[in-house]
Length: 172
Length: 206
Image 1 (tube, each protein chain N blue to C red):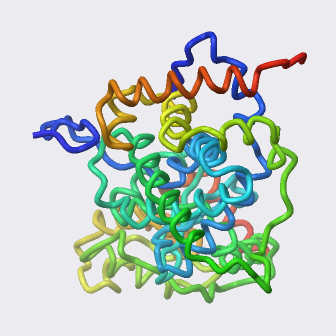
Image 2: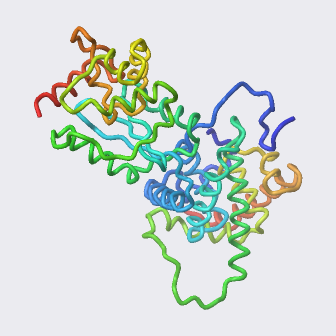
Image 3: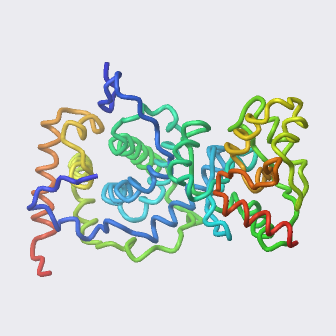
C-alpha cells in the first residue's frame, strides 16, 4: 500500500520535522507558485491559507511524504476556493481588504503575470507546478487531475504560448 | 529541493523572485497570528543570548516546556519536541517574551524567582516529583542530591535525583544547578560544569 504522495507503507521509521522547517524549506517555492497561478495580489492570501491548512493537517501527514507535492495540492485547492469566492463577491467593495506594504518583489514584472493570466488555467497551473517546483508530470497530474500526458501537454502548450507572448520582442 | 528546469525555459520566470525575504517575513508573522487564533501553535520557540550562551526557550499553551543549552543541540531539541509534544513547532518569539524578560532579569541579578507558567509534560513519575522539589531550593542556596531524594520521599533514590537533574527539561528556571554533591563538590550539569559555576556564583553575589 502506498499513500497518495508515494510513501511506501513500510518505510524506515522517520519522524515529522518541526513545522518551522517546512515553512523555511518550502515557503518560498509555494509563494512563487501562488504568485504564478493567482498573480501578485491574491498570492499572499492563498499562501497564508495553504500554510494554515497544512499546519492543521500536519500531525497526520505520513512521515517521508513528498511535502512539496502535498503543499502544492493544498495551494491548488485554496486557489480554486479563492476564485470561487471571487465569483461570488459583490462588485462594489466599501472597505478594501487590508494589504500589507508590498515588498519590492511583489511588484514583479507585470508583463509576466499578464502573459500567465492570459493562459488557460489548466496550462498556467501545469506550467507553474512543473517548472517552479521539482514536481514531475505524474505528480502534477495527481494535483490537477487528468493524465501525466495531459499535464505534460498543457505545460508544453503553456510554455510555447509564453514564449510567443511574453518573450516576444524582449530586448533585455 | 532541486528543481528540474529544462534549460530553454530558464530565465522565463526570472521576473518571479526565488527568494523574497520581505514577503517571507511578512507571511511568517501572518501565519503565527493565524495559528495562534486557530489554537494550532502547539510549540513556540525562540533563542536568547545569556552569560551561559545562547539558550533555546520553548513553550506550549500551558507554559514554558523546555530551556536548552547550546551544547544540547538546538536543532535536535526541536526535533525531539516535534516528536514528543507535537510537530506543530513554530518560531514565535513573541509568545516567549515574558520568559525571555524574566531570564534576562535573572542574569542581571534583578530577579530571584520566576513567575512563569511551566509545562512539565516532558518528565514523568518520580523525576517529575524531584523537579517539583527542586523549586523549593531557594535562590543563593544549595542542596545535596541526598537531601533532595529525602525531600521527594525516597532517601535511597540519590542516583535517580541525579538523573532527574541531568534530564531537567527546564534548567535555570527549575533550579537543578542548586543541587550539589554531599562533599560540597559541584557535580554534573546539563549545561556543563562551567555554566553551573556561573549560575552559582551569580546567585552567591546577588
